[in-house]
Every structure is written in C-alpha cells, then in structure tokens.
Length: 210
Image (cartoon, rainbow, N blue to C red; front, side):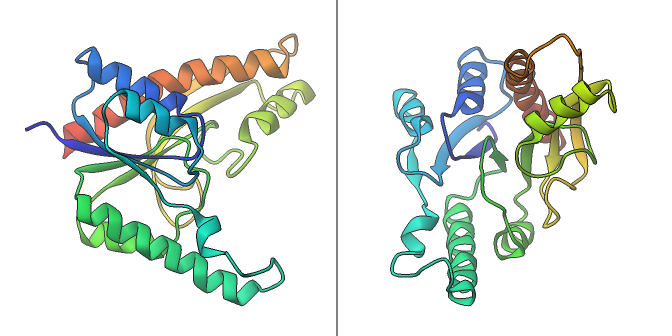
C-alpha cells in the first residue's frame, strides 16, 4: 500500500492540484488519502471532490461564534481547542505524512505535539528562503527587498513544521533570481510555478525517508 498523505489547505488549492496531478502521472510516491480545509468555501475542496479524494472542512470561525475580537483569552482557549480537535481528526485518519499546502493558520503545540507522539511528520510550503521573511506576505516582502537592492534571490522552501513559524528544518530549497525589472505580478507567477514543483519534490523526499 502506498504511503498515505493528508493535505491541509485554506484557499484555491493550486498546490494541492500539483500533488493531485503528480499522483495521476505516477510521480507522487504516495497517495492523497484526505484533504482538510480551514475554509469551507475553499476552491481546493472542489479540486479534491473532482479527484475523488475524501475531504472535510475544519473552520476556526465556527469555534469563535458568539465571541468578539476583544475577548482575547476566550479566543485563545477556543483556538487551542480548534488545534486539539484538528489533531484528533488527523490522528483518526492516521496518514503517513501531513502536507500543509497553503494552510494559512499557525499550528501550535496543541496539534504538533500529538502528531509527533503519533509518529506523523508534518511539512509546510513557504514562499521564501530559510530564515528570510517568515510568516505572511512573504512573496511581497521578498519582491520589495529585491526592488530595494538588499537581496538578489528569493525562493521557496519545504520545511518541517515546528511551533516557531517557518523556522523548521528545511527539507527542500529552491532559489529564484530577483530582477528589478520584473513586476510583483511576474515574480509571484514565478514563485507559484516553483511551488508546484517543490511541493511534489519535497513530499517525495520526506516519503522516501519514512
């Protein structure tokens, strides 16, 4: 039986589609067993359905119902409950690998510790080089730095997921040359092209080590 992959998404699912296409082509060294989205309206869920992959949504907004943004402590507790419940869902499916392919929420020890204890590795795709531009808006921040001349290369990495956002050990790194003559839109297009290759290669690399 091929190694089982669970994919976490939040949006359009173009990186999920890259994995689906690789599976259809016989390139992916595993099988996408399940997709979970943090957004119940994400187009990635349609992609999963069209590929006959089981899917479900796990939405933080449902946990926050009845609270307001100024209820900080209440929301912190609910956020941890969200992560703990996600961990239970994943462990119940028991994949060999979890791939964050555009998952837009921070994963706390509330999910990472149970997955580690269950022996389920988790990796993430991030559109920046290791140690550079952690967190959100990485593509735009990289491009801006390139325009300012402070860096000459951006890139994409697949890394292990730890509590420190985007600081896990890199599994795969791909560099992208930055040009002051290229628009943000052009750079973003290039990043996505590289992401679609990297997510397949990075997933395969981890699966080979399991």
